[in-house]
Length: 309
Image 1 (spheres, rainbow, N blue to C red):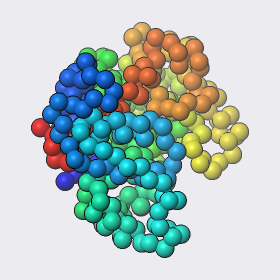
Image 2 (tube, rainbow, N blue to C red):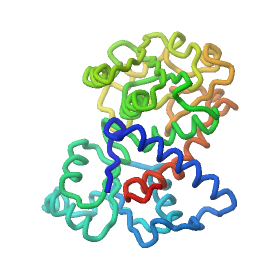
Image 3 (tube, rainbow, N blue to C red):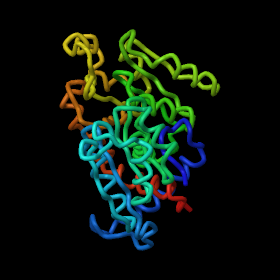
Image 4 (cartoon, rainbow, N blue to C red):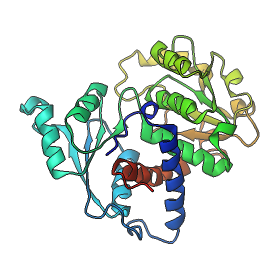
């Protein structure tokens, strides 16, 4: 049994193994329809329980299809439907019930501590579907998409992030250490990664590059990432924050500073941080990026269930 909580805690060889498996499985599914089960049905009879404390579209759909295509099934719960919390049941008791009924647990939450607590009490693997500090399933899938399009290892590419320092960027930073690629970050002053994250990078003898000028950040970029400036439940002065990011919008003019074959990725949903001309351009690969969540999450599930070969 292996958990999938944060990329920084998973060996690089295991992350690579997941990507290799995802590529093989995607290739084998070319002639299958959406709900057809993979020929080997490696998770036949297995149940993945999903719980959402935050809104979800891509994570919800992709995990549903992932476990279904592997031969298993899924049950989706909302936290307000359980006795957990206000209902009076402890997290420990809830975890034991989940372990009794399910074979795996995927949690999308507004609390990193809750994921840690569930990990301590569950006897089944837990997958982080998103937390305040990390979005590992998203970023590993993004790496799969990049290598699929560029047809080379991400270690040979220049990756640029333009935007706020959030959970997706935290996972991208962890990935830059694990996969050894150059990562440029373009953001306003005071919006850079937290010090403990930078210290972790330094401890691992790696380096990331931070620019307070979007144009400098995208020079020589093979891939440009972005995300919403105002995240869900972001408790800030939204008007003020948006004004501070006005020079960090992904425009067709900004894209000219990157390589000619540079691609644009966005984990969605989008806001005003990207120009529609870029979002719907040939350089934008956001729909391929979204669909690949299914293929990579299948391999993540196999990793957690110790079925990855």
